Amino acid sequence: MERSRKLSDIRAPKAPAFQLKATFSFIGKDLEAAHGTYTETWISNSQWRRETVVNDIHRVEVGTANRIWRLDNSKDFPEVATRLPDLINVFPQASTTFQFESITDTTDSRPAEQCATTKPGSQREKYRFCFDQKSGALLAKLSPDIRPKNMTDYSCFYGIFRKFGDFWFPREMACLEDKHRVLEAKVEDLSPEPSPDASLFKPPPGASELGRCLGTSVPPARTFSPEPGFPTGSHNTGSSVLLSLVVDTQGTPRNIKVNQSAGKDLDDSALSAVGRWRFKPATCDGVPMPFEINVRLEFRLYQ
Image 1: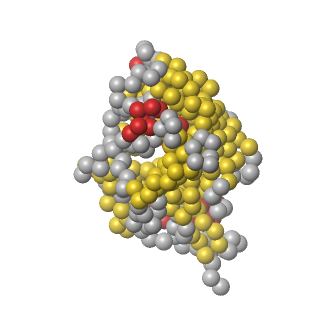
Image 2: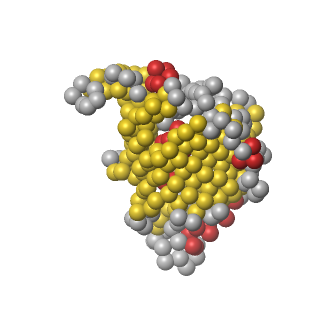
Image 3: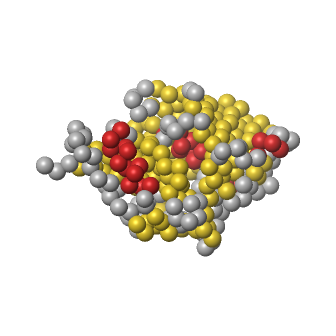
């Protein structure tokens, strides 16, 4: 992994400032093809800005040493597009440690690969990273997507490496979920940005505050979480609602949004229930911080 970082990590300490522009596409929730643009201006790990646009939906994120400030112009930012920064950032956080279980060589692939698989975690989840045997470039990464009732494989692949300063960075990338392609991106431009406008890195007015941890983080834990009631008179016999929310430093849910709807009656019941939840707040090196999580609530009408 360290060899690969030295080869391709354009966000490494003391790496030159840059601006990256990419186009991306994915299949929307109604099976329509969606297209967007991504722009990142990066000075250091504690000073960067990202803008993601999908049609008329716009997200701006500004990062500091311990916070991310996020502003959406719509409540309907596509869930698939939230995975884009992780795809384009390529590598896990440098502070993340993995314990590897096995290393295998695949010489019949082109290019030949060496893949490292981690030991299973507390939920039997495993990660895998595959590298070009010759250059050491990261060609693929697999991470488990843990859900309430199952676990799926989320795999991202990288190709077409081109020179940028002292680095070789991939220009084409794609992610698959259980072998179905869900997200593609193409880097259209990657260029030095030695003197970006300082105003770009000011938190946008009205932005949500999220914690950012480069040390040891602990996610929030529920302390009070009443189940939602099934709406009286609803004609929906069963479904689930996926919500996103920010747990603030007091353990209170904020900015609750519906990411996957089951109809207005079930959505409203889910929003009402989660609004009453309370948490032990997330921490970074023991210090409370705001933290974004997803919650899926299952509704079943038993007759």
